[in-house]
Length: 220
Length: 220
DNA sequence: TCATTATTCAAGTATTTACTTGAATAATTG
DNA sequence: CAATTATTCAAGTAAATACTTGAATAATGA
Image 1: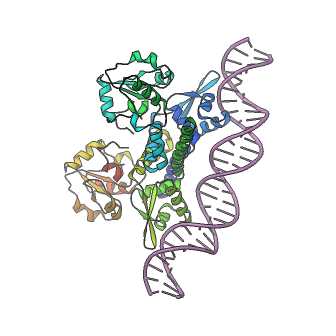
Image 2: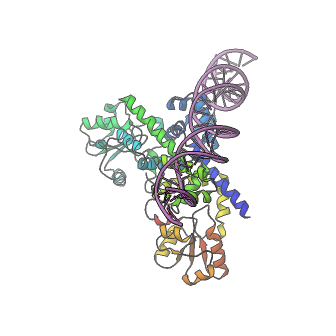
Image 3: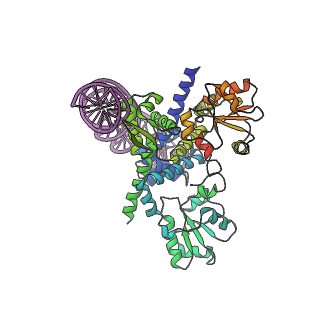
């Protein structure tokens, strides 16, 4: 009886540590980062994270074994995606604790998200303003990422064609831009360009998933 | 410019993966589990997690390097503790995702927290009732754990002397017992004993930290 | 059916890991 | 000052890890 419980306890900690270990390699974290914005084939992932295809495939298998990722066949290629949105949450929590504990990460964060590009409003207030139509929320990621999953009320903004995008915006409303999260710079340039053209523009550090789940239990 | 950002990105992912790796060993997770309930000396920890002193010390150093744990000297011995409550949050998040992703962990959970011992009330409602004085919240961990950090309104219940403890309780109010969280059984026996004696008693799966931070952003 | 394509597998290597044992350190007490 | 105590360090070992290269597989399209 007590022995069986002890055995179970061992299993518990070994399962939990398996999951943690799955997150314990830079390459795999980058995979999760990519997959939290889009599903993707091995070759594509491999290019995005800058590792060989074989190596990427092996990392993916480790993630799959830990249950963080799943595959679906589509013809000759395979599409990998996160098994669950909660995977993003653990990843965000890891970022959060990193930001608290590691000075390296603190300085990295202000490099990626320069304070002068950020709004002083709380995220709640931003979301509220967007909901009321008093502010414009733009998603500057690739179109396919936007189509897979974006934040409520967000519109897609073509970051390589700012001039073309202007017609989507009102100069009377502040514009809030988001991309792939804290360690992504896509939104920075757009904000700078918009400010040059007289818009009141800010960059959000949050990614689509965080903006979507606001109001429910989590934000990071 | 772009190169420097890339270098920073590499550092970001390697720092984050260092933190995840620090959680990637059963022994270290158990250390964190212990430390989320009490600060502790190496020898004590070593006994609790069932590893040699030298090995425990080495694990602690890894945790320290990752910034999850800190030491303070007290005379001839050293006291290790978590650097930050947020460490508990990551650990809880890991548990949460484990519960979602791993069947092993699901069955373990019902072994540790048998459904028949649990209340049907939501945790919010339990906390509300406790706050209003309509229910009794008991902490059945060791006294020193209780003294270091317990939940609001909780009283310490001596789990080895249930009979003695009875005078702390009212038979008219439901009793909610908590211990060290999901993978701890201390509260089970107390609940069983209390029920035998005619009390309406339930076991909570949450640990002190979770009961304390309810109302703010998190619960798991 | 054969070539192409995307992915996985197998084998090899260098590095890191978790652990052991036993000695070294450093604060405390007799 | 010597003995005790709690902890860390150093060295060694077996296993696991992240990567490489090149071959194997299996679906698709000519």
